[in-house]
Structures are given as structure tokens and as C-alpha cells.
Length: 533
Image (cartoon, rainbow, N blue to C red; front, side, top):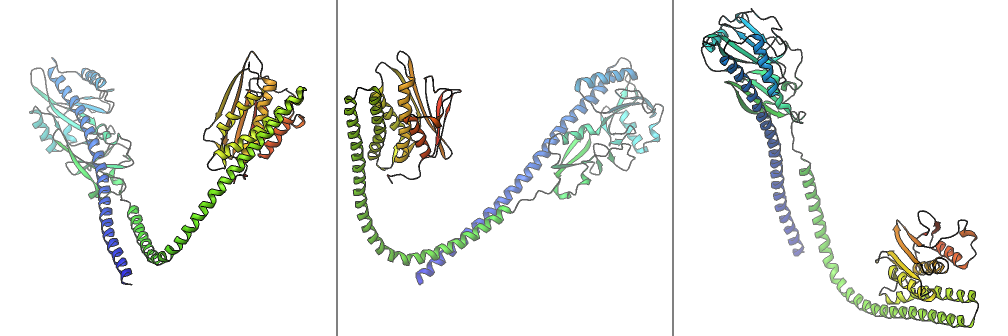
């Protein structure tokens, strides 16, 4: 009883340690899965930000080019000249988004209003900026005219119906006199589209803030001003119930303006607990099974002592049975050997009788009988050569059968090619092999009688392939074949009748095809019982 108690205590200790280790492993697994989720979000955010920076370079190139063009022109460009330059430049960089260029004089009055297609599409020329901007912004613009830098003001909603980034730089004539300032306004959508170029829009949501306070989307700026664009961005982050702590942020500098970009999953990415639940359930099942096994082990330990004595008796009896089995196998081999010898004796008698007759038909019948007996004799020969006393290798058996028939009936001048397409590992029991051997014997004998000719190339092809529960035997020679009106049902020759009878015994079907090749095709099923069992 004490020994059994020690086993149970040991199992409990092992299970406690295993449970502790399993709990730690599962916790580490969940932490690793969470890291993968966070890493995927971080990569998507980083890739989008990098792409957006490429868009910023396009903005910088465009604005800097306009400033350089105006400064280096011999005469301050006209509206048409500026529009022409703009179109030539956009053609080079393949910029397909909205752009509006305003030239405003030192009194803050619109002088030029240019788009790539139109001049002053909204009749702003002559209109004063002072009437639409605060005095603070006017003061900033006055200071800008005295500066050499390019400055980006906060985005605005344009009456043209899109949101834009207003770049500003001082405008000088050929005498380096300040004549006002130029305001190229570029579409916000162009830059923000870089965050939606991948195929995972349904996974991530992006937030865009100017100076940490102003929301902007691809369609509008939410700063309290009037929005002229009727379209609304379907990906606006406020449409999705995403918690603030789920966003990750980075900041992109736009000519002194700070664009804060946040990215998050549209739907919370929860780590599946299924593996943990399954693991704990399996641990409980294993623990229960372990106790059951231990209980059975202790029970079996008692039984084993009694079984050892019984086993000793069984071993003794098995040794006697093995000795008897060896004797039985020897007897069976002897039976097969004697049956084979008796068949060979009958074959020899038929051969002697053949010499007593001059009638060629009688001689042919006796030779046919010899071949049939030999095909069955070969089965017994193969059986007693085989250790199992049961199965026959078909490829080897048919090759020997063909050689015997060839030696018995062939003309030595015949040019004969034999092709056996049978898996060398294919085996059948004695009954099936005997039936199959008699069928092939009749077919080969028939070829020698009717198909083969002297002074020509003759050939035999035999194949056996497995098809589900059945096997398919194909036999063909290069003879002229059976007559077109030949009918197996009305055939009177013993050979054809034997083929049909033996095919039926193998639960098979027999047919003769003429296209694409003339061939006998027999579907058969190995017999379920064998005399060698």
C-alpha cells in the first residue's frame, strides 16, 4: 500500500511542475503574438510615413521650382507664362492633383489666380486678402515678403472644393524689388493618399493632425472654417471606434508646419485564447489519463506476476506448435512437389502418345493438353519454392510459361519478341494463378497457331494492371486478329470455351477490341479462397 502511495505522490509532483511550465509557455506565447500584432502596425505606419515623405519632396520640388522661375525671369512672368511653366513642370513630374497659384501684391490684392487649365476660375483678381484673413495672418504675410524662405501656413478649405496646403514665398521683380508674394496651394489629398496606397485599407485607420489640434482628411480641414467640398473621406478616423491609446504616432515636418500622423487597427486585434484553452484542456485530460494509467499499471503489476507463470506454459506450448507447423509446411511442400511431378508425368505420357498418332489434329490436341497441364504444374512448382506456400510472383510465372509453350509449339525459324509489362512485385494465390495461367496458355497457343508467320517479325505483349478491386489483363499479338463477326458466345473451340469459363470463375469480363489495337482485354478479380491456405 505504501509503495502505491509513493507512485501517486510522484505523479502529482510531475504534474504540478508541468502545469507551471505550461502556464509560463502560454504566457510567453501570448506576449509574442501581441508583439507580432504591434510590429505589423508599426511597419504599416512606417511604410506609409516613408511614402508620404516622398510626396513632400514632390511638393518641395514644385514650390522651389516656381520660386526659382519667378526670380530668374528677366521680366516678372505674366499669368499665361506662369501657367505655361506650371504645365510644363507638372508634365515632367506626373503630378495629377489639384493646384492653385496666387500672386498677391504688397497691398494683399489678388493679381494672378492660376490653375493648370484656367485663369482666375473664381473671379478672385482684385479681391483683397485682408477681407478673408485675420490681421495676425496679414502681419505674418508682411513679414514673409521681407524673408527669403518658403513658409507653409495651416491648411485651408478652398472655394474650389478641395483642401489645400498654402505655401508662401516673397515675389521679386528683375530689379530684386519685392512686389508681393506668391501662394501655391497644393491638394492635401495628394500627400495623404500615400497612407492609403497599400491593399490593407480595411485593416488600418490613420489620423492626421496639424499642430496637434486641427484634424484634416483627404477632403476637408476641420478647423471651424467653412468646408466647400461636399465629399467626405470614408476613412476619417472618427468614424471608427478606435481608442486613443491604440494609436501610434510620428511627426512629419512640412516646411516648418508639424503634421502629426497616427495609425491604428480599425478593429481591436485580440490574441486568440483558443490555444491556451485547448492546452489547459489537454493538460487536464493528460493528467486524468496519467492517473488512470497509473491505476491500471499498479493493477497490472499484480496481474503480471500471475501472467509470468502462464506465459511460461504458453511459451512451451508455442514451441510445440512451431515444431508442428514446420512439419505441416514440409508436408505441404511435399504435396505440391508430388502434384507437380504427377502432372509432369501426365505431360510426359501425353508426349509419348503424340508419337503414336499421325493425325496432326490429334497431335495438336495432345500438345495443347500438355501446355495446359504444364501451366498448372508451374503453379505448384512456384508454390513449393515459396516460403509462404501461398503466393506466386506473376511476372516470373508468365515468363516461364511463355518459354515452355514456345519450346513446345514454335517453329525454330520464327522471329518472336516477347514483352511482359507486369509489376515484378505482383503476386496472386495458387487458385487465381492457375486460372490466369490457363487463360494465358490458351491465348499464347492461339497466337502460335493463327497469328505468327515465318519470315516476319512476330510479337506478344502481356500486361496486368490494378484497377480498384479488379485487375486488367491485356493480351495482344501482331497477327491479323479475330474475324469481324467472331462471337465468344457461339465459339466452339475448346480454347475459347476454356477462356470464357476461367474468366467467369475469376468474376471477370472478356472482350476483344480492334481499335486502336487488336487485343484481348480481361477484367478479373482474384479469388477469395485458395487451396494453399
